[in-house]
Each structure stands twice: as structure tokens, then as C-alpha cells.
Length: 249
Ligand code: MG
Image 1 (cartoon, rainbow, N blue to C red):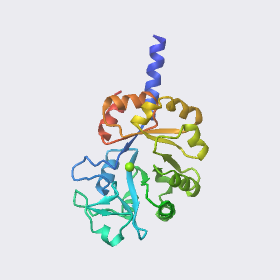
Image 2: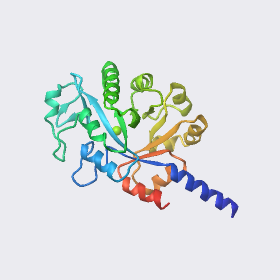
Image 3: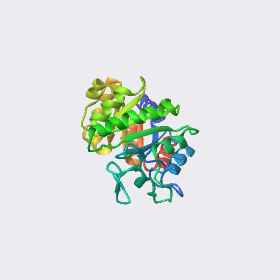
Image 4: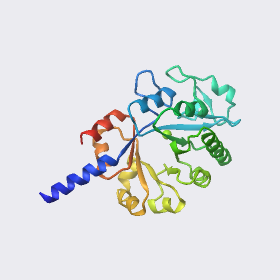
């Protein structure tokens, strides 16, 4: 009986702590599309703790929000901004520049979880990191940002140049919590598959004092598994489902 009560208390505690991050915004909402400004606004409107989005830099240095390397056949990292700007998302919005996207985020409450995509040229990535940080500072959004990336060089650049206290997470699934702490990352933001392979990293992260985000967790069993293992954040395409589960464990 005592054991059961303790287990229940633990579950409730961890449940209360897990935060919901909408993957590419809440794009499943009416009129939205992945990484659209509408998906960011919708994620905020349903009270997601954070909303994730992907960033590429054009050849001439303009930052765009898009998941894939290409949009309608135009590759962002090797194209000029004027050729990218005319491209539309599936909901009819033009592809947002990062500036437009962040501007839309100013009046919102949701954390802006910015993923810098892995570019072919690490110098282009380093330039992107500096541009992002400068833009964020000018827009007064420094306290609203979380940075994530698969690129180890970009991770190191963010850690080096972002203001103290900014959380930077690594996505690629191959570094231990101890290693990430050593680098100065806030923690791991790993796939469900990586976390199932390295189940002990939940405990190791707690020991090291770094946080765990798991992506992209869409079904209830997997959500429960992450919550029960004390995930700090879950990134999901189904934010409403996760919110309901957290409210009624
Ligand atoms: Mg992403």
C-alpha cells in the first residue's frame, strides 16, 4: 500500500513536470501547415509550453523557416532569398523568413524552440548561428528561445555565443548525458528510438543535471513511457493528445 502510494506520487510528480512541445507547430489545426506562422499561433493558442520549427539559411544569408532542405524544388542553402521568398506552403502562406516568424512570436507566450538544420558548409552554419542570435537579441526574444540542432559544430557555436542561461540541446542521439554536460549543452533532445536503445540515459541525465526531450512521440503508449521515465519535454505532432494525457494520467 505504501509502495503503491509512493509510485503514484512519483508518477504524478513526473507528469506535472513534463512539458509539451508542438513539433513544427500545431500544424494539424485547421488552416495550418508544418512550420507555418499559423501553426506557431495555434500551438500557443492551445497552451503548448513550446513550439518547434526548423531554420535554413539561404546562400545570400537570409534565414527561412522550413523543414525540408528544399521547398517546391528550390534548395534553400544554395539559392538566393528572392527565389525562395516566392514559394508557398501547403496552406497558402508564403514561406516565412525567420524574422517574420519570430515577429509573429513576440506577443505569444510559447517558448520558441529553434532547430538549426545541418548545412553542407559548417561556415554557413556558424554564420547562421551569429545571425540568429543577433536577430533574437534585437527583437527582445532572448528569454523565449531554446536552440536545438543535429550539427555538433552548430551546437558548440550556440553554446559559445548564446547568452548565459540559454538552453541548447543536441538532437543526434549519439552523445551521452555526461558528454553533453561537458560540452555545456542543456541536455539531450533525442528520438524515441535512441532513448529506447539507451534507456539508462534518463537516469544518467538526472545524475548529471541535464534535461531530456524526446521526439517525435505521437501515440499514447510512447507518451506514457516517456512521462514515466521522467522526460522533461516531449515533442509531438499530437499536442492535444499529450495535454489530455498529462491532465488525466
Ligand atoms: Mg525539427
